[in-house]
View 1 (tube, one colour):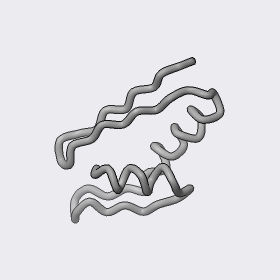
View 2 (cartoon, one colour):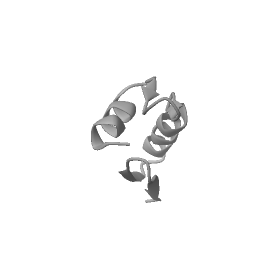
View 3 (cartoon, helix red, strand yellow):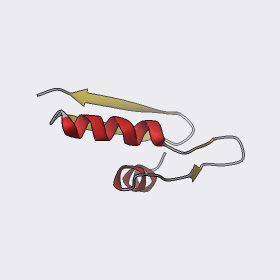
Amino acid sequence: MSKEQIDVILANNYYNINFDDIHTGNSLGLRAVKDYIDQLDCNLFIESSAYKGTNVTIYFS
């Protein structure tokens, strides 16, 4: 995912994202994680490389 795609996913409740004809999703899982992390007052860091993978790190307070 690009930085712009991550920003849009985290800014909206629902977002349909189409990377290409093979990789599609609605990103509800990532948005749900962010909402839960916000409730716990923790930090969420996302690093992503298109077509390579995404690392999600959660720091608990």
